[in-house]
Length: 570
Ligand SMILES: Cc1cc2nc3c(=O)[nH]c(=O)nc-3n(C[C@H](O)[C@H](O)[C@H](O)COP(=O)(O)OP(=O)(O)OC[C@H]3O[C@@H](n4cnc5c(N)ncnc54)[C@H](O)[C@@H]3O)c2cc1C
Image (cartoon, rainbow, N blue to C red; front, side, top):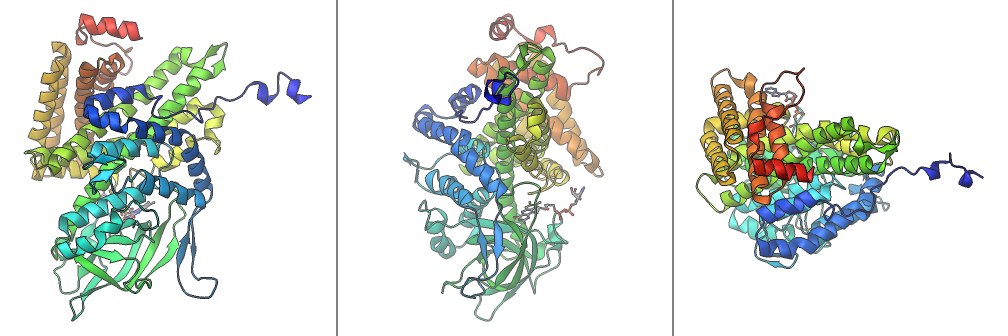
């Protein structure tokens, strides 16, 4: 009887986006990729992006939901009674590992000469676009993937030739039974942000080998095949100069477990699919990486790579949240109209889109800076050095708000665990905590200003974008003036006692840079919405405004041509 009843639930199905291809439906991303990737590479990658987009909107999303509801567990013994610790992962998580690490080669592609059929090294942007699609379904696994990629980068950069030759093949393998995963054991109970307080000891034996002892308090992917570990050589100086970097294998050459134990797994708000644990090192055998006493500097390279990946992940989470909200707004009806026909909802959607679009612009800009820096181009390192903490700081904070506010667009269903929103909200909150909290990362922006001379390089980069964009003069001037004020604030923050301004300065630099880059993208791609978003960022995020005044875009920010295009596409 209920089947024929017009009041029954099935007569009013809740709009469900499941099964949509997250790449092919993202037309704005297509425009960006045409700008940022060489045509031959984009043509080669198109089917791979399509495939991952399809998976992320379907199978991968299902696997992620299952893995989230079935977190890993720690087993202490084998059934035969051997004291062999093991983290038991749900098959859904293992299948996601296979897809990410083996099939798409996400952790290895920056370190191999052929991946996904492309001959030669993949540029960072391809890896980040794939990550951006993958993370829209699964966030937790992206941490081990990024740590494996970053560990390999750090090993190649600082490890001795013998160490690299020995371990690189497994770290860059695409064979799922053969490949190795990475981790990073840095944080201790009394040494989180304050790495100089590291207490884990490294003792050198008479045969030259190193043994590590001490507790590590937060260790994601704790049973990884290799971990980069910070420890203090027992004859070394106090403070940062005494901290060295070590490569810790999970198993020794005879196949037995190395001398460290996973004490317990953490019960986390998000990233529930992926294990994070506490570790006790009990004379574990490890290999010194690079120079003794340079641990922090070398680890900083690994952390920066992970911070950029965190920015990419935040951008992906926001995109998923916005795309879900847009879909619901187009499909769900109330008061005889679709939600998207309602002016207040249109405004709400715009507020969600803005930070999501800023973040993906900054992903593209930072990925290009990374490629140029690795190629040794002058000034590219200084640019990368400031763009990385900028995106980690602001995009991760924005993801908290965007995922939370997007949840509301689904109404009551947004709060129910069978939809994507709760997982997005839980996962999004982590980005601002790990790999450096917001305060620490904002201070790192200021460190780049002080020590790397990043500010003039960032300004020159933005000036070049403005010159290429040929914007209406009044809008270009407003952008230039805003950037000059943001730079002045960052300079004040970099002076003695200016720390308190670090977050304000980091936000201002992020908004100005992203607004300028979005305006450049709009000019190049002819995207009218992108130009409007660039203007809204400046208007709402940077310029002083009367909170009681209605929204008004200065008339002279648009040329006659852009006004016509905007009207036509509105
Ligand atoms: C789920 C999860 C997984 C993690 N995985 C790993 C991992 O795999 N490997 C690893 O090494 N670590 C990992 N971490 C640890 C994480 O990186 C740290 O928690 C983080 O860096 C903060 O350190 P803390 O917890 O010691 O906080 P604290 O350093 O004690 O900071 C507490 C507060 O003080 C603030 N603060 C500190 N110094 C300053 C300052 N100078 N100025 C202003 N404010 C300041 C911070 O911003 C923060 O708000 C993980 C954490 C979580 C939650």
